[in-house]
Image (cartoon, rainbow, N blue to C red; front, top):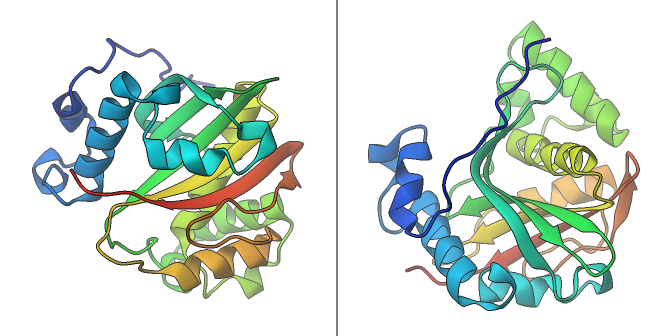
Length: 229
C-alpha cells in the first residue's frame, strides 16, 4: 500500500506560515475565521506560554489528572489522518502530541468561530462509499448507523482521527478538542448529542468529558473558549 506522507518541515514561528497549508488560503485566512485565529493562538502560545500551548487549553487539560501539566511535544497544522481508506482523510486543523507525566497524549483540535460541525449524517451519507465509511465509523464506536442520521459527520471523523493518531504514537490518551473563537456558543446541542451517542459522559461546553475507552485508548472530549486575536 502506498504510504501517506509523514515528513514535515521547519518549525513555525509566525502564524502566517500556516496560511499556505490551508485548502483555500484566500477564503480561510481572514481575521475572525477559525483557521486564522487558531494559528495565532497556538503559534503564539507555543512560543510564549507554559506547556507550549494557549492558556485556556492548558487550563482545561488540568481538569484531568492524566493531562495535568501537559506539554506540547509536536504540533501539526492541517494534518491528514487516513480513516478506513487513504481516500479523503480527516484533515485536522491541528494535531498535537503532548508529553504527559507518565505517557504521551494526542489531541485532535477542531477550531471553530461559529461554524457548524459539518453536514448532518443523513445529508452527507449520499453515496455507497460514504455509506461504507459511516458503517466503519459506527463500528469504531459500537453504535448503530440507523441511530446516527441526526448527528454531525465532522464530529465522527475528527474524533476517530484522535484515536487513530493516538494508536500511531502508542499514546494511551486522546482528546477531541473543540477550540472555539466564536462570539457566542453555537452548535452545542450537536456536540452533546454526538458524545451521548458514542457513550462519552459529561461532555459539554467549557469542560473535559469523562474518559471512555475506545479501541484501547482513553478518549475524552473537550470544548474550550478562547478570545480572538
